[in-house]
Length: 282
Image (cartoon, rainbow, N blue to C red; front, side, top):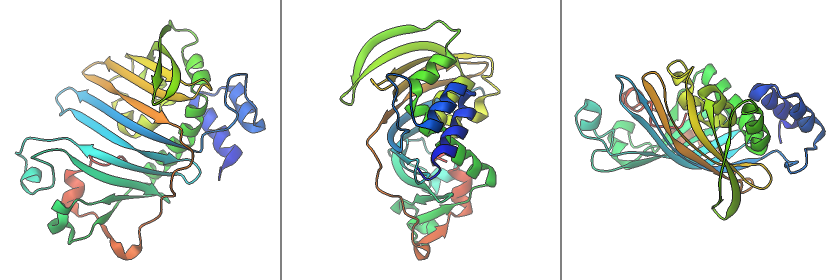
């Protein structure tokens, strides 16, 4: 890994301050049954719905890959069908006749989106749009990627640590994507869930206040090496609820994500940025 030991140690400390895991990452060894190699990349699918009181329901459906060596993400986000009404829909920004898919990339601390052909009038014909990101978002994404590599690799150990004083329930084993897995159900707070699945942080951190004291029923499946394969969650808090699933497959390093040629990129128009802030993965 580009950041090797520092990435692993920092990720482990942030994930829960588990001293034993710090030693694992530094010396490259692991307890019996745990993987000795921190994940370098992962493919994922995600279907998440968040309901906030007095706000529209937000749903994120995405699939893609994360590369922890390159610190990059590429994802295809599905925007569901919506009923016409607001100006954004009338202007053709949002889908009104069916779902729309947007390809997004995070590479070299920059975010990009491939614009659908229906946006050509708004983008001046540009197909690749650059998305402005704040220094805070850059730090968030770097942290999420560092944490995710470790959380995926040592999910079984981390889950056991998070639920050490909780009641857990074994569920029937499943084969997911051809991978034999064992499952466990437990109640986690949203903060604990984000330690187990840091990839959800950019989408759920803002909901911590509303659900800070609520527990979420979570079922976790790990493979024979203790790596995370799937998480299914459903829970309600004070005026908020979250439900959905995220699934991972460890397929080795994906194709390298490259920065689009400068001549092909245009800044995302203000109208799109204001109307589609929830559409991309970042």
